[in-house]
Image: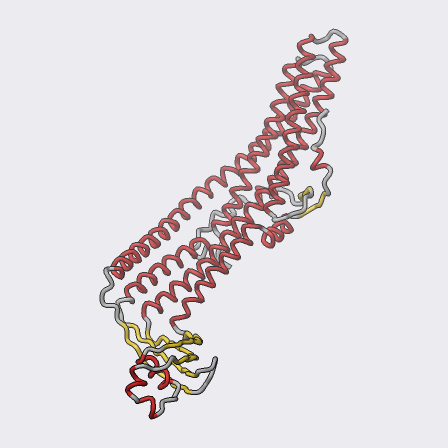
Amino acid sequence: MATAIHDLSAQARIPMTLDEIVVLVEKQNWDLKKMNQKIGMVASESKSANAVFLPSVNFTETFTNTTDPMMAFGTKLGQSSIQQADFNPEVLNDPDQISNFNTSINIEQPLFNLDGLYGRKAARMKSEASLYDREWVQKMIVIKAKSLYYQLVLSKRAEQVMAHLNSTSEANLKVAQDLFDHGNITQADLLGAQLRLKQVESEWLQTQHRVAKTNSLLLQHMGEVDVYAIDPVDAIPNPAETTGLYSDHQVSEERADLKAMKLKAEAANFGHQSQKGSYVPRVNAFGRYSFNDAQFLGTQAHNYLVGVQLKWDIFNGGKQLGATQKASYEKQYAEIVYRESRSRADHEFQQLQNDFELAIKQMELAVLGVAQAQELHQIRQDRFAQGLEKTTDLLMAESNYMNQEIQLLTTQHTYLQLMFQLEAAISETK
């Protein structure tokens, strides 16, 4: 008789609903945690674009020691320590060494920076797009969680089917042994029943392994570090409740992935405008307040300087032209990607609708197939117990029953996958 898998049976068993699984996935999934950090990085980069409005301030403390005639005289002048004797030609031509500590606060304030303005808008669009990217990734991760959850439900159902078939095969073998002992069947018939039991035991063990593997995949997807066995509480949705459910829907432009692509296209457009804006002069204000003293951080003499600078990069070796052309291609590429994705989403949705309706019909057919195979198997089994049925006919009926059960589970799995994909296809941003 097949034995249960040790590592799964020894684990704590925790009943869980699908909603509970989704909550844990949204909170703990590794990919979502990494996505949150990426969004933080993009947001940080976006903040750096605020330099187009905000001033830059820096503090410097500079020490110099010199005997250079020009610098020595200028240092004394900066320290407000010039005396009549300093105009002596011998002192001017051959000054003693002089030290100076210059304490300076420098401020730069952008006044007009067209490329920076468009660059800031592009950065803001990219940051917003990253939020929609995360929302779409979250939807996909939730869909995978639902898929694994119901895959676990189906795997457990398959395990139950195989356990039932294993018990049936054991009972059939006992009947076959009794019939053989009374000379009603041949040695070959008995061996056939024994072989069938071994096959069922092997397939039962495989289903147990699939349950353990699916359980492990779901735990990993949930971001769980503890190991335990999940007992699904929710049943498979009734197909009768979902027939025609998505027939009146369509793909919305507010779907997270399409919204993200649209924003990226807009960001590329602003990036192109930013490059074109680099041909326009920039205007910046600047100011400096300084102290000069022979002592560290001294304030013996002070002065200030303020001004406005207009800077115009007329020609820089063709770099601006190349960067502008590249930005133009990036803009066109982003627009094509968005239009292609929008068109593909519509076509995929139509195909999903057709496949979903077909899956419902196939599942209904599979249910009838299981009912028929079960009834036929029961008839064969009763006749076999009375010695009125060949062993091969019984085994064929048993195999057909098992295949019909597996086929039903397969169609249920297909149905669920399509249902989750349709849910995502018609979703809108939060």
